[in-house]
Length: 149
Image 1 (tube, rainbow, N blue to C red):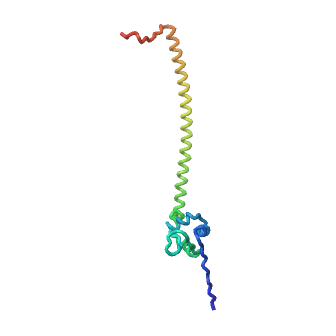
Image 2 (spheres, rainbow, N blue to C red):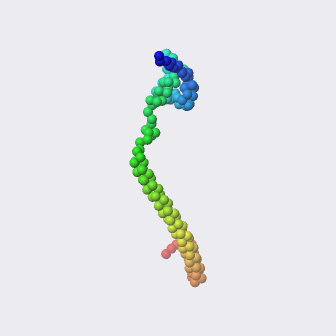
Image 3 (tube, one colour):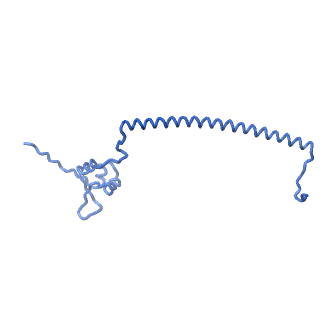
């Protein structure tokens, strides 16, 4: 004769026990009940407050809950190969762009240095020209009180 296995219901009493069983916080478990239909029972006529749940019902609820789309592996091996190929191409482009950016920075630095030298030479040249004019010509001063003809 077969021996019947009698299972005793393991009851979780209160939000803290249910939360500990699930490894979550009380507020998270309450949100699971409100938004996702976590199976809890309340005393008759009460919509808030004390709750109880059975481990078997919670385990069944977890097993029956669908996974989020982001967690489901949606790519096949061939798709992964194509993705890796695209990723490698993009990494090569990134490397090329970094090299070009470094070259452009060097060119800008060289141009800036040449501009500084040109500016300094222009300043020195203007200084020489102004100095030589002062020697050969009278310096005209501007007088606000005098009217121009």
